Length: 257
Ligand code: NDP
Ligand code: N5H
Image (cartoon, rainbow, N blue to C red; front, top):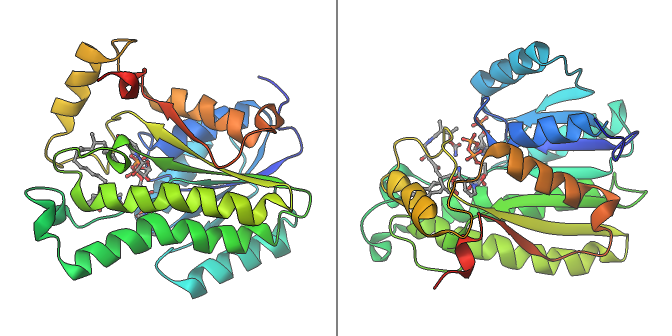
């Protein structure tokens, strides 16, 4: 337990179950004393979240529904947060989606639809929620999103999602410039492979996780708790001099040629 985030209100988007990266983040931020507000898209995730919070004795400030595909849904969610919570100090964006059939084979085969969907849910959503959240961050704030190495390098099967993450990381930089004048920071974490619901059933996951154990400086995979603690650094004042950054939490894999 620490008091790094005592009295701070932080919105967490993207807990689907106990394996979610956003759940690792929840534990780290809760242990640092933050008041937490959650958003879910699916009813199933909402139910899992409520159960997890109960089991872990975490009292949420608020749980609201939010589908980032809809401007109306985003507006309604942040309006409710404004009315029921007021000022927020942090926002964790841990949301992505691509059609399963676009996550294999050749990137050249990506459909127009599939490209736009991946960009909309995985990259534009950060722009839309930053716009909504900044209105509530009247005391300054910190926004953190989740990326992957496929944004920087060609990683087999990651395909359309790699291009969406490249767009997400560029958005982190442009947004950081826009909101810096309000003392709001925007950063990303680029995590190594972690077995989550999203990762389930996609081709190539095991291979990527095995390579980390073989080749990364630390010779082990990362977990949700490590991403949680790195996110705590970004949400807290410990990182007050850092914005527009992409921090690799990947056992050092990205430095290996
Ligand atoms: P999860 O499946 O646990 O989380 C993905 C979340 O995205 C779900 O909670 C889902 O909500 C949410 N989501 C999808 N579409 C929408 C939408 N339209 N509106 C609102 N929420 C939506 O997987 P992860 O924890 O792995 O993924 C979290 C982030 O981490 C993603 O950005 C992913 O790309 C990134 N990442 C993951 C890595 C990994 O190896 N797992 C590595 C590096 C980055 P719901 O369940 O309600 O549909
Ligand atoms: C190189 C790899 C392995 C291949 C690529 C995986 C990419 C995964 C990302 C997206 C987010 C997965 C996804 O959208 C799956 C959906 O089509 C189907 N799943 C769902 O609908 C579930 C039920 C819901 C909860 O999922 C979502 N997203 O809403 C990359 C891996 C080594 C690392 C990795 C897994 C990265 C990443 O970005 O997640």
